[in-house]
Length: 375
Image 1 (cartoon, one colour):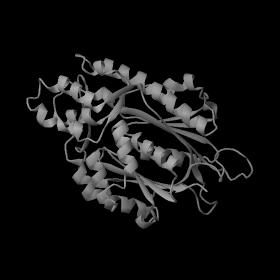
Image 2 (tube, one colour):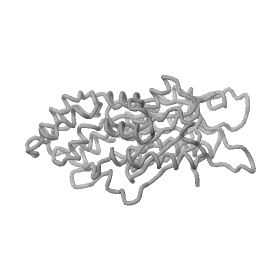
Image 3 (cartoon, rainbow, N blue to C red):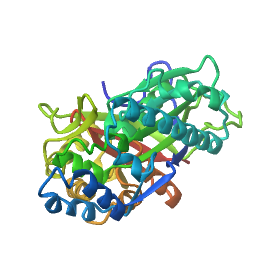
Image 4 (cartoon, helix red, strand yellow):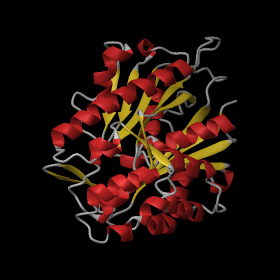
């Protein structure tokens, strides 16, 4: 099955699925990268003799600052296990969910009671009941709202989540779908887990959330409501994924008694440079889109070297992914929401005719979503 919007061409034309709004949210604690290095030295310096050899990852990451749900002192505390980390995740993620979702609904001219379906993307904590249920009373969602929590997509979740929201909207034209991607990456910072991968994670990851409202036209003219053919930020043209075999060890989580430890078992930038171009071409080909018709790629900025690798893989001039570099510099890698922060900047700058969002995540998977500028 291709990633085009689901419909029966014999009965009706495909629904026109629109991105009506996009909003972002950040937690309260700003962490300058220089301060992050001081914290990391305190966390890891006694356990890793050659920490100073690894320390340049903080200055070479292309990051000025990040945001976190807890103040710096919390991360260097001893004895933080699953209960403390889970509590921090639930408190921080729920607050960010409410913030991002409220902003997105306001931009779309909607209220929480207008929402028919909620897609929640998060892979950095465990929440049962899931985040949208925990936020329901504060938001004012209807009792009959449909909940679609999605776990495990990691950094690919922003693109894949928007694709899922688009397909759900297309399946029931006229309904309102809310997507919220929220990640609390910092709860995985582990002073008790002295590994190179954990040091890289502490140099790279931050917390954040983004939300979108999506609706498909139900074909009724003159409604004057958000989601009509004349409204919205962009049209969702189609989406797809590519998963490489035998790559489960590239990225993910290992779980132990104290929490989760990040997995970076292969060098991601050279892999991206070598493999992503063909994968993107394959996805776009299944959608009937040629790469030379794409005016702008909006990429998940996984790291400074990843951005350079993506520019090479996609045949872009070095420096083309400028918004990606700025998002990385201002917020670090927030996992799933990060590419939506990039899209937010592109929208404010003015979208070109066609934009293709891309992100890579555990699996190892590349996700793509094509967006056409709204008329």
